[in-house]
Amino acid sequence: AARQKNVQGEADNTDFMINFAEYDNDFSVDAALRNKFHDLNENGINSMTQMKKVIVIGCPGAGKSTFSRKLSAKTGLPIHYLDMIWHLPDKTTLSRDEFIKRLDEIVAQPEWIIDGNYLHTLPLRLSHCDTVFYFDLPLNICLAGAEERVGRKREDMPWSEDTIDPEFRQWIIDFPTQQAPVIDRLLNDCNAGVNVIVFHSREEADNFIEMLPDRPTLR
Figure 1: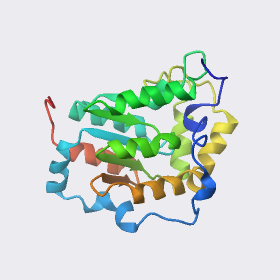
Figure 2: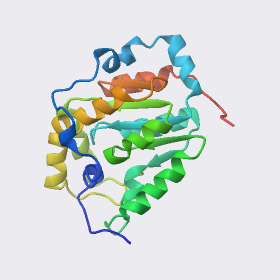
Figure 3: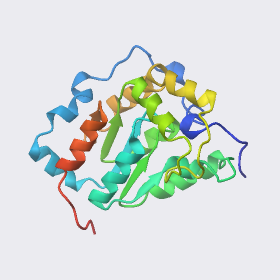
Figure 4: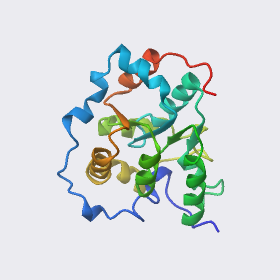
């Protein structure tokens, strides 16, 4: 059964299975991890053509979905937008159990890009993925990005937003102190075999796409 109407985007259910009190908000992920993008040379980029199970995370408005579409076009990997799964066209949501069931079905597939935060499911996705792209952009850029998409038809949401819900705006403002420390901790603790790429600007993300060799077929 669908749940009641909620606020926009990923702000709805990020904490119903995560206890934020368990995480130290002063924790900062290792500098080597945050700057990993800058350490990628051409050989490193070329090796990433082998990625098949990708998650894209970061503050709403940072440009995750735009990057995911570009990455899919470059690699042929199918995209799954968590917002499109969680939200229904009538602005209600799936049940928690149905959402997890749908996600379990996706991660069981051999290839995918999963776009979205939903931190209660991040440990599950980290246990199945081989690559993480984390958009760690300044707050003002994210707020502006969220404003810019108001009124636009979006591939990653089942409706167009007429305005930014005040609760959703506050969730974005709180992201650096409430969500980011949890993401940092989970990334720091994830499997050593997972490639974690952190973007500090959209230009870095665009440059990565430009540098990534075409992969005509994955199958």
